Amino acid sequence: MSRALDLLKQADDLLALDPRRPRQVNLQRAISNAYYALFHHLIEQAVPASLGQDRSPEARQIARSMSRWYGHGQMKDTANWFRRAGKVPPRIAALLGRSSLSPRGIVPVELERVATAFANLQEARHIADYDVGARFTRSQAQEYVRVARNALADWEVVATTGVGRLFLLLLLTGEAPVLTR
Image (cartoon, rainbow, N blue to C red; front, top):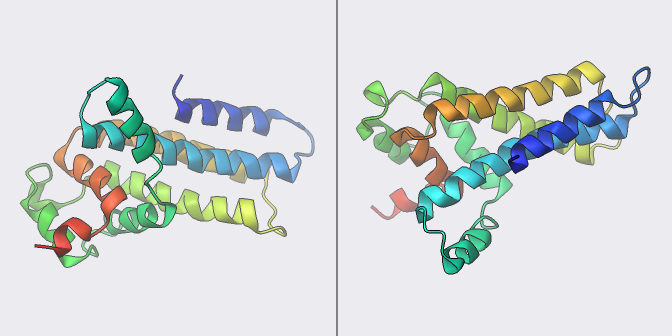
């Protein structure tokens, strides 16, 4: 089972605890797991997309190191570009416009949903992990887990498209590659 599916399974297990009156810590951890399922899945997709499919020990070592290069803030910034059609930085929009993967540079709806889910889940995780006064209901936590699952399914639709590969690259680099042009 992939790390993402393991995290979602653990979230489901946490949500099933305390059937009458769920403990906040279990709901909060389930929300956090929902975010981390999508976070780690995107990184697990991005690293081989950048490095190729080399399975040598050296390549695996580089991949392990590279997976720690991804930052939550940069990934959220990138997600925000893709979730707001037409509100991407101009140089990123130019890349999308030249992309053959989407008509007229439009971000596919599945990728918009992945990006929206990522940004929303990250915000929910911050509240769940850091706001000591935050309270959640079981149904709210279940909804976040559902959003993460749907985002994983949506990702599979766009994973091998050019715009999907561009999204993965930008999760790591942000605007840096296009600022030097």
